[in-house]
Image (cartoon, rainbow, N blue to C red; front, top):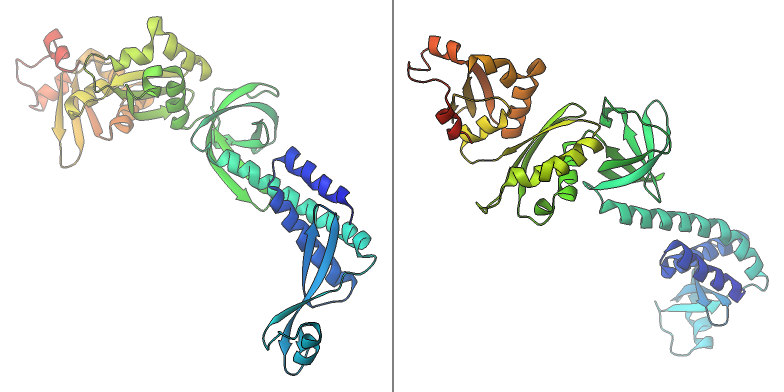
Length: 364
């Protein structure tokens, strides 16, 4: 066994970032397999590698017994004591059985096994690197697509963007750069598999963390996200410090911060509202941009009836019910919207109750 093999292992370890001990263990396993295969041996053997001299030695390990039944696994006490008089029954004795031409045969046999272990170790390194990126945003380059997936190159691996995770208003062109949300990292028999999304609410949340320093620093907290990807989203934010405007922080000067995220999401509309522990205020805020006259809360059923000015009814409900649907998803409260006229007919409003600037102030 030439020292060149150990040099090759050093190079592999450095180039691939694989622990050298992993490669040496793979080599030892391959050499043991080669010995048993080429020399028809079923004995318990051990390989010793000397990196300094480049020498390889094979030792057969046998149990000391009184009467030998299997010569490949056992040695008699008399024979053992010829080598060392201190041997006792049940001791393990090692005998060197290195064949003269074993180095050449073993090197050939080891190549395939070592290559396989290297591949497995590389996969392990990649998996370890990317498992920490779950629920994070990464930037990749679109490489190719098929009927099921768009494949995004993330550096050392291709991620899969399934059709269900794509934005309906977005085209995916080869070589385009794309920010994606990592939903799952798996270690499979075929190697690490990474699944990403463009439609996940987590993408919106992470983009705001990247764009808004107050969120990244924890001064402003994202409480909830509701998203219909490619069309419209709602985000509720909160700041413990009353001097901090959480909504203004997210919008940015002249809307620059939120506009950068809107651009990244190809024009997706984003409503940013202030979170409140008071469900009347929170639900009212969530129905932005519509105005609210009153919010009637049913704590037991976690439901609300929201009364809005007649002319604001369609705005509050939204196109195909989208605004109300997103508000309910954002707050976690069921929302039933009624116009002032309808509410008055059902006895929910008195003659004095009507929309006014003062009423608006209650929900700001």
